[in-house]
Amino acid sequence: MSDSPERVKLSKEEKDRRFQAELMPVLDPLYNFAYRLTLDEDDANDLVQETYLKAYRFFEYFEPGTNAKAWLFRILKNSFINDFRKKSKQPAKVDYSEIEGYYNPDDVEAEGEIGASSSDMRQQSTRDLIGDEVASALNSLPVDFRTVIILCDLEGFTYEEMAKVLDIPIGTVRSRLHRARNFLKDKLERYAQSMGYGNEAIEDDAELTGLDNN
Image (cartoon, helix red, strand yellow):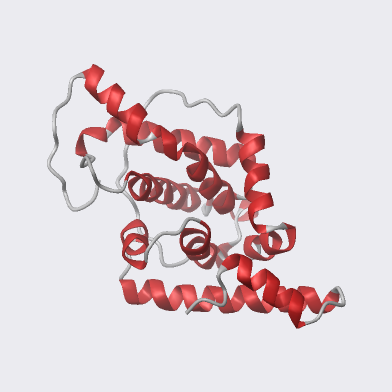
């Protein structure tokens, strides 16, 4: 999918075995990423399904030993962007302020089905991880900034991995993450003040999301 990797032909049995072993363990964090991007359970399930279908179709291009999570996250991000652009043709359904700085991914097709019976549990686990107030503030950010916070502070990607997932220079990753953290910190500060909390509450929320990291 990226940098034109060489295709390695596999038997169906070997392809299915490796796909199950290397990519399916990423299902839960992939769903969490999809939910944080779409803010909708059904859309997140659809996006995860589409991602795995594309991953299966192009699995012979996946290099063993490389970061399977980053590979899947990039496919999901591209699918999200493509879907966002399609929806942008329907003004009543899209906030145009959130659509910027994106490129068109390859147009690919695939067939199949990915189960999503545990989606409610995954959605709740994501909420519990970062807390309701932080989640609300995070969800209110424009998608570009929301994405870098998710990738870095929730999923633990390095700057180099984020640059590959997002197809942007590392310098852009750093500056976007800095701005995103400032936006989020400002939102949390205003929320804390509105609830009558002081700096201690702000610092606690910032610690949860890595906002005090350099």
